[in-house]
Length: 465
Image 1: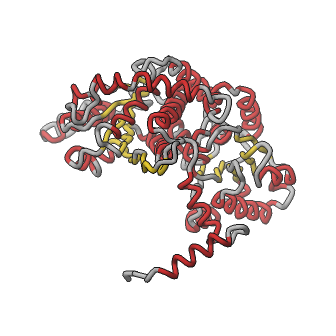
Image 2: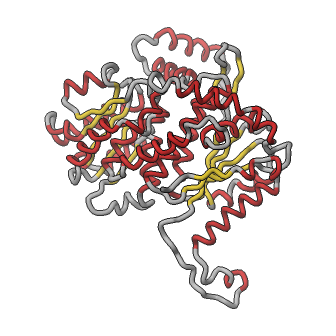
Image 3: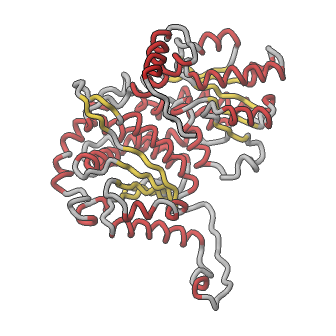
């Protein structure tokens, strides 16, 4: 069975020195707090942290699989209307499991996938200009049904479908993922007769990729969603132990905590060595940023804490970011995502053997070069005293992807215990939403709009150009 491997050799003081690397004493001091954090998270698995139960929800999976099978061959395009946790996981799974050229050559019987996670009018307008909505199945994802971005998209594409197909026929082109009982979308679903799935209670958006939020679109584009769940369940079993050095989620949470708390490294770089893994870094960025980036701790004290996630792609960003990483400020630590066995082998021709700059490449493989580039970056980081660990995928499969997704979700939940904050709210995000509602004239937000306008009137405009 393929298992993810976490190699933290180059995160230690032995590798990068005690100023930047973790010492045995520092790790030992987190042994019992890590075990206690795990117990606290596990105790809420059937309450408000139900992401831990998703790998075992085979009943819901069965309904999703049945629906996806019924839609097979009916649509050229699957279009996700969602944002944040309702979009990033969908894109990451698609990127990992399909060709980077899938939208050009989707393969027999498979639809394309478009994730429209923005309300930029140029993005939406271009889609409307170029894609016939009658060829699409739109997956509308919003637990509350009040997400302005998603609901504005829903209104736009619903109208486009009705104009193209009529009031009755358009219903077959919409599937909604929302709250089971409450919210704005549920009554609309019941009135219109849209197919629908539920966002489970106790599962926050950024922890929802293994729920219908991520599984519906994945099943529709041919991803083995049962394999994802089995991989997640496998990681869940691995992470039952309270032994810090045997539990990859505890180890990763401890590494993040120590890097920021003890080593002064508030920036966490995920360096994806694998084109197929690049959007996992985007998914993780939201997971850790929204969960751990908080102004207040649980006691209500101002702490302004949390790591800043940065995403990089190897080898592309060796030529754009590594100069900073190797010689810039000592304020970063690194997670390298690696693939042991790529799907393709590409031989480099033995040409220009009389040119030293090219001769050494001939007869080798691009896989060898890619591996050497990754190792070269790891060596350069380590020799410069930059702590790094490598998380290796034996192969990129649904099983290993499920392991990764669950590992990082559990690790971030444990981080919240170490940081002493609520990892499951997002007041900063809500503040921005409220301001947007006020500016758009939503009923009930008149007072906030008045506050914003009053504050604007107090400022002297300073504009260049």
